[in-house]
Picture 1: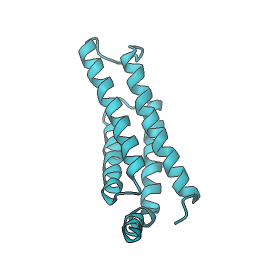
Picture 2: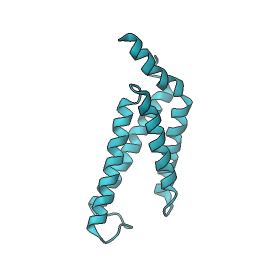
Picture 3: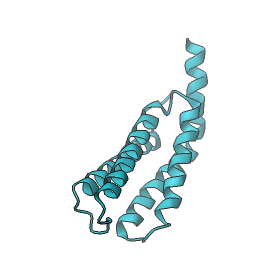
Picture 4: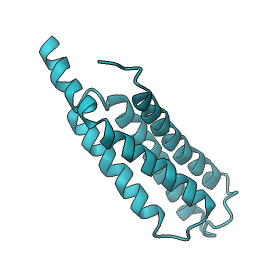
Length: 127
């Protein structure tokens, strides 16, 4: 149970970075400084709210990642959907950075899957 394994720490930081990206995006949209947002304030607020919820989901799943096996599969699913959706719109440098962060996170999660999935079994044995 090595919590200080470099790839585990890197995954955690990348997950928090991903959540921070979504939070930042929601703030940019709600402040109205994103250059490609629609004129409709209602749609902008909806997009900002969805981005904020994406950030919250990532944070919750990151916190519960080693506690529940389902969180591991959910975070892979969420990140996978985010990666696919990031390339379905106009693709710029910000999208590339986001995609690289997301794909690196997915790769590390898959690489260390035994460590994440074993945690739930070990914690159940201890109780």
